[in-house]
Image 1 (cartoon, rainbow, N blue to C red):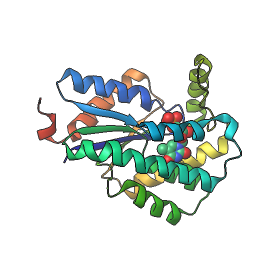
Image 2 (cartoon, protein in one colour):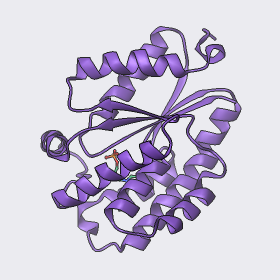
Image 3 (cartoon, rainbow, N blue to C red):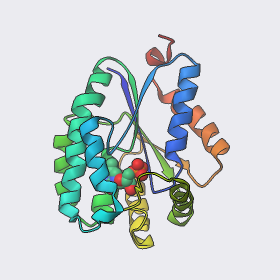
Length: 218
Ligand code: TMP
């Protein structure tokens, strides 16, 4: 089996930049890794992503939204994550099942048991070995996300950025709650620090958690 690392946090917490840097660091050391994200990661799930993040779809109901995340995950696990882990790869995934608990349960208020149940089906037994939580004040994160969106001329994936600040505080609390529930799986990184500081934290803390056998140059 490979090693499955997920990256989580509120909008603009800096995780996407850091996953790319981590993938580059691993590649420079001759360690191969599969880099993917949710929602998305394969053609069918990418189509679902377009529906989920389109700012014009603000009328989507919380339950429909939840089921689309689960559908995208089921496809992504089947098509990408499971085969890669079975082939012994390191998989770096930008968001996974914890995002559904933080956003759809703590954020939207859907019963946690419904989400755990659906996640159980969608994940098909695949759970992260390590989850890196980029913790940051939503005010800081949303400002970063706003600047990123303004600099993007293409598709505007901003439905969540348009939520009220209170929603983002609930999401942050949700993530911190999950980290307390499972302290061995989670590593918490201060996402309000600079890119360089966060990178230093990631490269020391995360690489050390990858099993020795997978860190060997292949
Ligand atoms: P991203 O901006 O990190 O690519 O994530 C896409 C958005 O989807 C982000 O606002 C968080 C949200 N999301 C959920 O609400 N539930 C989920 O299960 C996942 C994976 C993402």
